[in-house]
Length: 375
Image (tube, rainbow, N blue to C red; front, side, top):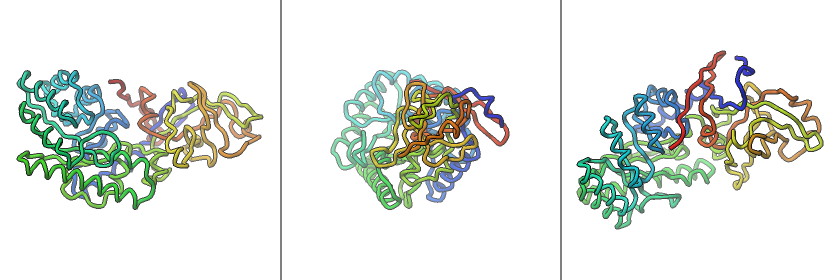
């Protein structure tokens, strides 16, 4: 198609690559005997979620209640809100329940559990609650061996809430490289979350759900015994972080930003484009691990990477394109003013969040897919 018809900067989705990513992950989960509950926070797009569910996914995971409301309005009724529940947000969650949404919420502390229990008593409502388990020290969650785990369950049950299961996210996988390390973390994620479920069941709680997942551990998991579902999100698009970790190839990356060259600083070897950090985000990816793509990898208009050229620096609306580790004295000839280029993002979730819509490329055509945003 004629990319010149698209105003830049713009978020492009290669639908063929995206569908291949969806199929691979779905087939992998099917082979391991677990349900796939995609994390919708990456694309935040109803059309993408529909394609994932058409391929066999079971419901979705969201990171904001606004996502839950928008996806529910779009016909997705099976939703897990995988962020710790703040008491002030419980009335909003109740609104979704009363409209017919099958919504699960999350807690990882006795204080939060008591707030949920009190709200259940006062509203005569039963929430299905997942307890977040810390399996890698990355962020939030309670240790699977902590006494607090059973205290949380008791606090929930005292108010009539349903201890629906356990959930974990091995986010430290983003700091690893290599298949062996990721396989080991995937097994740690699985075994510790399963252990937490076992302790709850031994204490008399049904705990039907054991939910694990990050894209790196999902891709590298070899055994998911006793897990009921996997949540992964960025796999739908992949990005340069996933490429540097080793869970995808550059040709799997389905999201890019279309940009136009608007000027040069020849003596510095710079081309200047209209995609700055407002388009790419400020996420520098894995630069601290020696995988420095600046603010993104430069590609030709058809999406083929141009080796060595990155967005080396960025202002709000200006991206600085240069040769990594060198100076291209002929950069103005290589990338004349008006040239279209694509940029592969470091972090698909963060880059996607900069745009209200995607231009979904399917062969010679493009469709505009709206994207959800906000909280």
